[in-house]
Image (cartoon, rainbow, N blue to C red):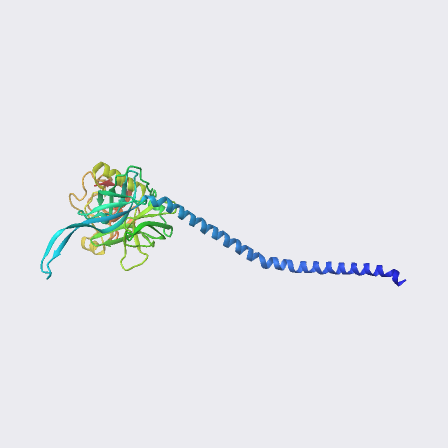
Length: 385
């Protein structure tokens, strides 16, 4: 009887063991899986976020690399050479006798092509020495003699040209200065220290509409940038991530780091500069046609003016030039031009500085306080001189 029941007991024990194991497994899974899921979900989400951010950074990086490759061939080095006299001294050092001259490199700068016929824009101070010779070195290492076409000392702009058989690669400019945003990325390519051709730095636009004084010259409407600044940077293009020029480097602040300035430039302005050279042989400048003094609290009190800021048009014959833009627009002697395009005219930001980077032919909106004390909005078509 017992032997006969042995198989039955073995089967029953197997069934009970299986059911018990299944019960434990199910309870373990139901109690642990949600817990693990809750614990793992934030980790997975964070990992995906990191991967997405890395992918975005990689996209920006690739964009910058691509734009640098496109921009590079348009940027050139400008080498300044000059004949220096060599002297022979007597053994005691009392007398010097000229033996002849030798050409030496005395400076350097940067520029970039703005027309495919070899036309280059740079800073006026780069090519200011009329006794020097200028050599352009292109990105492929070829050297060309350069001639100075025209300069604009007031805005520190110069146009030079080389003769090259094949079309030169050019850079385009932004359409408007409103396209330039503070904190946007900015790429610079330049001839660093006259040795490291087509060096690249990446930074941001730190500010707009800055004004600085360099010796006796005042430059206004500048872009401030923190891209790396070194000797030889003058004339390099400052470009956005679309590869379009937003400015031309012009100056740095001595004994500082990360404070550089570029001349804001648009496609309309560079087109006008080149067209004016073609027509007149020089870079013509914006011109309104008034003789004025800047009002201030002191001037207001002294002359009994009705505003302590603005450009006071002298209340005398000839202060508004007949036939000028101001005359046509209705500006009269004794008026005070308070604002241009919403920008107040002050001692620190005078009328000349405000129109300096504008293009003749533009329509400007002036806020004018008439001699009667009434304020008027006047539209003026900017002239040229």
